[in-house]
Image 1 (cartoon, rainbow, N blue to C red):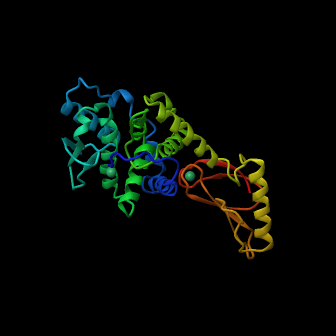
Image 2: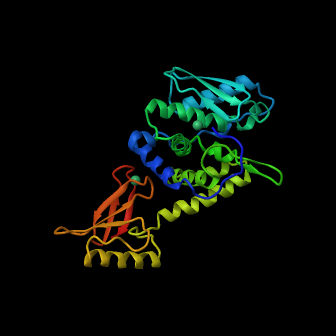
Image 3: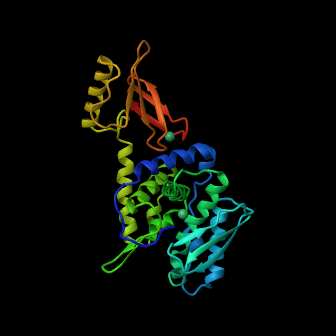
Length: 298
Ligand SMILES: [Zn+2]
Ligand SMILES: [Zn+2]
């Protein structure tokens, strides 16, 4: 896990983040994702500076292993001087060696966040789920951690004041907020009450606004007036001149119906899997991957 540097903001990794959510659903299926309806509880990973360093780190690691239901996995946590924040050796197991940066000896409250990322690496390794490229894989790891209920700790480790800033993980604070919001909307959970960092709370609110925007894109009925007009225009063009792409960059696409009816495809707002339906007015559509039902006006 990376360490230091200026804090990047916005959504530079959004496409990879979204692809990671879809990949997670494809690999785990709806039924397994559902078993992660409860997040890691703040009390279970709390770590104060009077706790024994090694015993405390082992306890928090065990809690994360329990969260991911890795019964036979044993995390051996050590500390050393290193440039990265943390690292895990992905071997065959059942023992996994996690190294944490020495600075966590005096920043114990963030040990849970660092371990959340590293234990998620082990979980994905055992699932044999990875993205090509180190950076993409780290984004997958942070996204999986956050979507499955452990990564809110990473966002909460983001703190800024007049003289210093700290952030863990590869997503920007807003991207963490976005994934956490996706999780909150899917599981009807409110993680905002757990934040100890005001900056984390702000990033979550921003990410939630972005996540809600996904639910207001055409052909969803929740779309605003301008989006609906644009959609109607694009649909007319698709009918009149099959094969022409919409003018602007839009999330939906029409499949020219040579003989059959015109069809529209769009990303599921929850899991980003593409949904395809015939164009025929108001329909309720259930996403085959995450099973969310959407009201659409095609
Ligand atoms: Zn990592
Ligand atoms: Zn879906």
